[in-house]
Length: 201
Image (cartoon, rainbow, N blue to C red; front, side, top):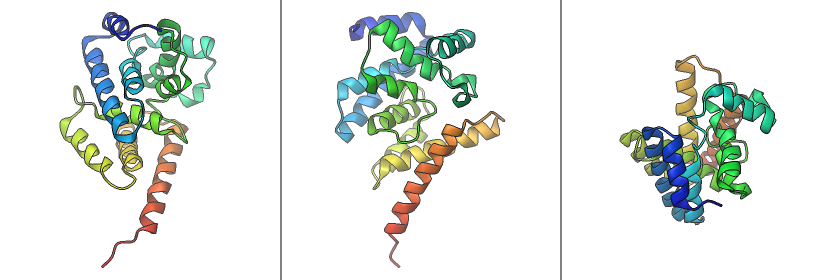
């Protein structure tokens, strides 16, 4: 596997400046979340760093990777903006020599997510949405506050999915079924939690 410095040099050459700055932010945020939830900080940092490694590849080439190299079900990827996520898992394996399934899975699903995400998947997904370098500060601070609540990780993800779905609807973009199914799963978990802890008057 490539060393971190080598990976950073590759990213500098293959991402635009803002995307590279974003990747550094996700890496730091993923490490912080890993420490909070008792996961491997360095592994999380690496995953956050490379999660967008395919972001600046053109859509035609991304589609070719997904259909010819990976044989993905394109029904899951109705919006070309999500192509870089599964393709990133391929690029990470081929270019950086990464064969850790947990890392590759988290990269694969960091935009749409998946039903039954692991805690590792969730923190990479969340770090992408709240990193401090390019994301809105007030939004990031709000999500960190949500994380301090009981079942905060699922609640924070639910808020991110609510925001994403609203944004897609506002822009009249297609919403993949995976996104809807994850939202419903998180909503059910939140509903169950609330019903088992009724407020006292």
